[in-house]
Image (spheres, helix red, strand yellow):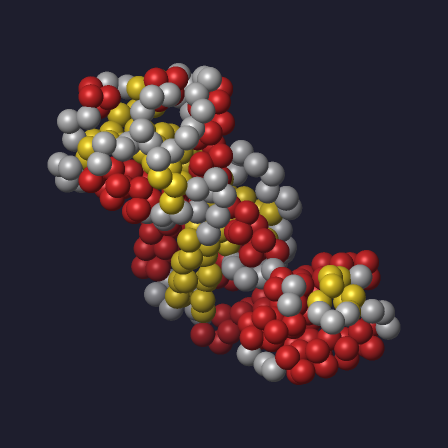
Length: 294
């Protein structure tokens, strides 16, 4: 039944029979037959059907909760048995908000040295995508904001407080000292796209001081933002730790943004499910040891 539940989870995630089949590595008729067999076994209709996928029935929505729990537990069991045979090993799938991509290595490098048989996969995702992927068992943990928008039912480990700087080309007049958020009204900016929580945080702090953010350029990549700052009169707003890697040369400079001295907590999130897999439990323990927040 586990394989049928995994197909059911994929269908709920993809909302399309063909895409779900592709994600599971099976043909569409195979997936459709598996869903029908699952319905027969449970004695209820799980999916509204027409000429195409039309959503989950109320019973299907309830079954999805159980499916995620059962599949998650089955994966935990398999990993427990592997650890019993081979020691701590396996794959850890992490999703990370773009502004924390330079920070994730502080966790993975340290953990990898302690547990060389664990392999990491790291993807860049929005905070919303991270929570969705946790629900759908697509990732094992995420690195995201903990205190700005609702997280739902997850396990959290605070790691550090994110603070903000204005980044501009060397010689920019605003680099002479701290800059107030309220002074940015006439500054040409490039910022992350609105689907990024970092952008919503920046908008929030600008609005608080009466400034409307109308960036000249929006991008989903910090590298794109920084490359435009290097080649133009644009400035950008970045978390300190995301900016540090770009400030090692002489091309760019940064100054703190003050009034308010804004900060937001970033940390590890994992499914609210126990027991954790041995690898994930070890990662959470190591994250607690590395936390900068008391």
